[in-house]
Length: 140
Image (tube, one colour):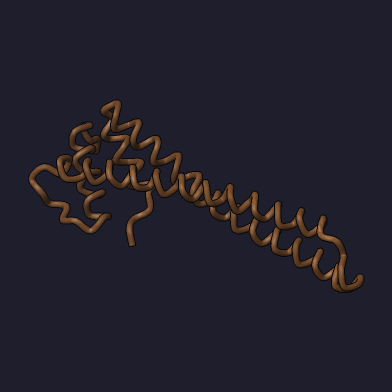
């Protein structure tokens, strides 16, 4: 069975509404789904940018903390100096891993939100709804 483009768009709008907890059987699902998708894409874009800035800050902080510990003079003997060096490296690695996790989660969300907003600006509602269903996480 082949679907016409308007029927598929309406079906995707109803699926989007149902996936977000709204009643899918409304008279005009596009009027209900598109503003919500636009708001969700904008908030996802804003949160992804914040996550990416946080990841960049964490990366810089981890590298800086590890580098500063190498420059700290070794006071209190060799054992304390070695402990400081190893702890600094452990903190730097932990912060870098945290930043990598943030980058891994925020990068695809940022790209998906940009593509949704771009599709909505060009009038490609079918593609925007498909991306909204596939790429944006459902709210919890």
